[in-house]
Length: 292
Ligand code: NDP
Image (cartoon, rainbow, N blue to C red):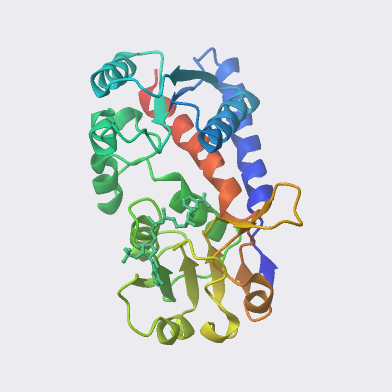
């Protein structure tokens, strides 16, 4: 069994990006610039945005954190987005989700210029990705594809069962893995909460991507010998014995499933750490598409 180490792989990707930025500086080019919009002061969002900004600094990008009051009106937020769309010094930006309840999240995401949408959530990017055109690919599925590719996990002709059909994970990864190209060419089945006989399906799978958010849902009896397991799930499970009062669990019962698998992502330390690295990769790509 080989662990697909997202921490190590994401660090390697960050080093590659850092080297590329340093080469841009040597050539006298402007370095990539990412902005992050944070509305309100939700603790988890603050943590995520903080580590995105720190990662930008680490690889040598310019970064701007725009903090807005939780009670900002939708009109004022849209105005802010428009300013970012017009800002030529900016290659890409993200709007940290979730947004406060009085804001129409879809309307905000649709107002982002697709050419600066480094989260890849705009329908224009999703459509371009599905048509195999240049596009910003959402960070989590992009990170999974990178892990599969860099570990040379065989995917061609394999049966992949994706459990979950969300717009940010399940659906895009099912599209990417069925496309031509590295880590692609798989035969993909998409399962969801209405799927009948899920264990029967997962037992036939060469590759299983779990993206549903139910801790330790995939157990050893649902997996065939030698399967590849990608665990996207992140759930905080209360645990009095832990200083933080909780532990992070994936969607896979790790120990028992790992014993049967050929490759597996741990939680934490698997898919999760890849996400920020892929956001940086998309921002570098945005800068390169914007050159000179
Ligand atoms: P969503 O809640 O948007 O989607 C969950 C999906 O799982 C839905 O399609 C749902 O089906 C399906 N589902 C729910 N219950 C079952 C079941 N019993 N059997 C089969 N399918 C089921 O979640 P996300 O895709 O946003 O996230 C999934 C998990 O991944 C979460 O734990 C989240 O925290 C984590 N995550 C991790 C990231 C990372 O960086 N590692 C990034 C993003 C998410 P239906 O459509 O029918 O409702």
